[in-house]
Amino acid sequence: FDSSIGKTPLTFTIGSGQVIPGFDNAVRGMKVGDIKTVTLPPEEAYGPHRDDLIAVLGRDQFPEGLTFTVGQRIPLQDDLGRQLTATIIEIGPSSITVDANHELAGKAL
Image (cartoon, rainbow, N blue to C red; front, side, top):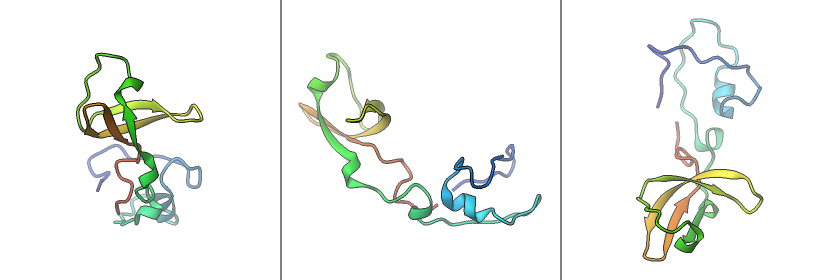
């Protein structure tokens, strides 16, 4: 999935919640210079893909004149007023379907 080879090292405090849980657990006990290959199941990464995070929205919920494309990421607000980003996965004549799952949800890393 990703490597730090040839890149600036990632710095974080173990247990602080700065990285996904599986990565946090995988590096525990490592020392400077150690190399480790890790595979994380979805539950230890970005979680399972959740169908409840897919929604069909009426085009009338958006300002007139906006154009949409499949794969486009758009900012939205949930029922509690929290900001989130969703990906357009389908466009219909009067609606768009969006997926608010993280792009890596449901995937082993």
